[in-house]
Image: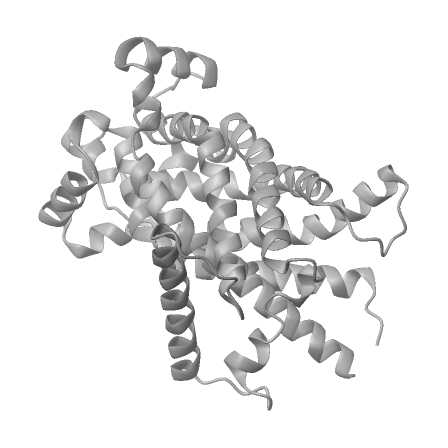
Length: 348
């Protein structure tokens, strides 16, 4: 059965949602550390200090503050991102004068991902604002910037609506766009280049082709235990590959491992390219809780003038640690889900 554009968009949207869920579940504690260190660099000497203080002040649940809006944010962002990615690939084909079924180059895929991210930013900004505020609520209260209140998703939403109205959820939108559009060019560029490298002359679609049958079995049935054990094996295989590479030994990985490694490379490329912009975005979204916050340019100048250029890189370590497993899981879940749905569609 040949899929029409609407069916293809629905598949991309669903696969993107699966990828977003996997990304949050694997990387949320590191994301919390990142936002805390970006917004209050003077309170933490480093990642270890931030972890210890968070645990002593709030307990283990402190690492998962903002998980609900983070799940909503990532599911919404990646659903829209991958759905629009398919449409933007068609736009790039049209602009380049290519056939509708023609394969795009890695650079053209990167451009399509960059265009798609502008649409994703519109759904990401409101949910990420709520997430960032929940993650830094303890620091805002203890520093006296805001009064103590109930720290729930609903209390933050009501606070935003009461103070700024619906447009208050779009504090930091310009910063989000400045991060997303160039960042996802490097994200998809790094991912596609890595896939090309691991494909070694084969079609990139061959990578992870056995993922569906390995994870769910040939009968299409998957238990939670089988999925967990399979995911653990993939993670250990990826770690094993990196350890051998660090020792100067190299071999071409097989199965789902190239997808995880390619996703990790894409995530690292994104954050290295736009991390200072993300730091400013976090500050605008969090500090606007205590009153009117300056825009991107004025906040950027203030941080550099008062704290130095290195303040823009506060929290980079947990971000780099998080980038690999979180984005590896994102693309693994996306490609696995997409291939599974496409195979089911073709069976009818």
